[in-house]
Image 1: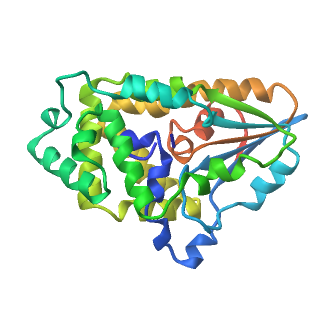
Image 2 (image 1 turned 90 degrees about the horizontal axis):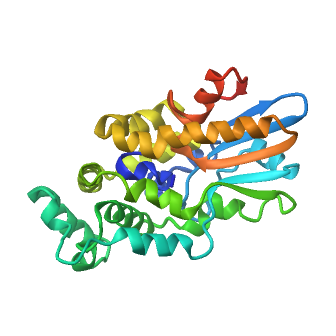
Length: 291
């Protein structure tokens, strides 16, 4: 899910891999929240991390207050059910006779084999994946190896919050997977090569990113996550972040025209920079409280 760097811009979760290394003081910091109000409605925006270690104290008081009175609770997509798994199988495997390693640079091939071994994945199995799925698979495997779990991530923790609120979703699971799977292969490969480099050479990146998230430091999140994606692949940046943010902004404006209290929870990378949801709302003349 969910705009950090490379293909992991889809999964802001990737920035949590080393959250276990955070100091207790950092864990007490609050991630950023944004709010929009008019005469008869309130919308609170929260940037999520999809996988986290157990026991991390991240819930802002403003988020909990909004959930207590929420009429509707929005997420990026529905994670339960089999649609996402079926779409991944359909769109994530290379055709017979093709191999991922043959598409990578020599350095990328060596890193792919080394990182697959390091996280307990079969190099042969990974070699049959399309680049986008290999990117996600390795990134998530590193998170799990280092103690992060989807069950402790923001969406899972909030799944049962506000039981009286209607659940809404910006995208279907297949739509979300298609943003990755239908990107040009050259861009997928560039992202995978960068992910492999980061996993190999810069394991502390995740720690820096999660510290920034916990502190509500949007400038650092953008500098370490969304900004590199803009440079690495404008195509992926548009598909995974900017384009989706524009569509979500239109839906938020429609909701603002109604009434009641809404809580919106999407990947933290969607909240940063000039193409983040708060900036897009402000560009449309909406007063947004928050960083």
